[in-house]
Length: 166
Image 1 (tube, rainbow, N blue to C red):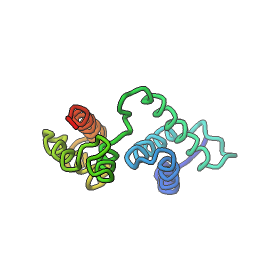
Image 2 (cartoon, rainbow, N blue to C red):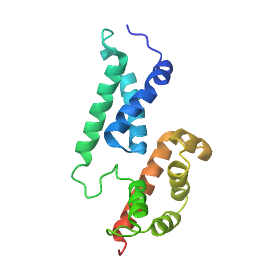
Image 3 (cartoon, rainbow, N blue to C red):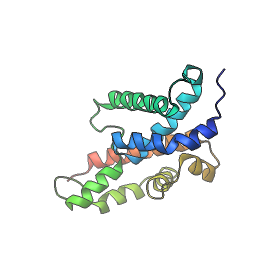
């Protein structure tokens, strides 16, 4: 029977797994989400871990497979799930409203037009870098609630961006 402390495993390998995922997707939020999913999957499948292999290799294999699954799942969508408003903001800043991108001002107006709690959760996560756990604690909710509200807020903003006359 394998006895591995999940907290110790996370402390030792989470930065490495995050860096590995970020190098593939170049998206901070997606890399964070997939890092958490990697450790959850590792915990659920710890009995499959071969102690003759390096833990880091096994975790990166899980992370890579989760990223591939995510990419396959979202490749046929017009706006991929991992295309965050941050990328649109970056393009708006770089292009100064050329190449058919809305201005930063326009996008920020869209964010502020969201109802609560969507606006606050989005700003806490995107602007302030709060984790889902920290957001959940602030609202007295569970982490899954924070993830769902953030996901929905992104979708609302993406929809409004698509509807904008440019």
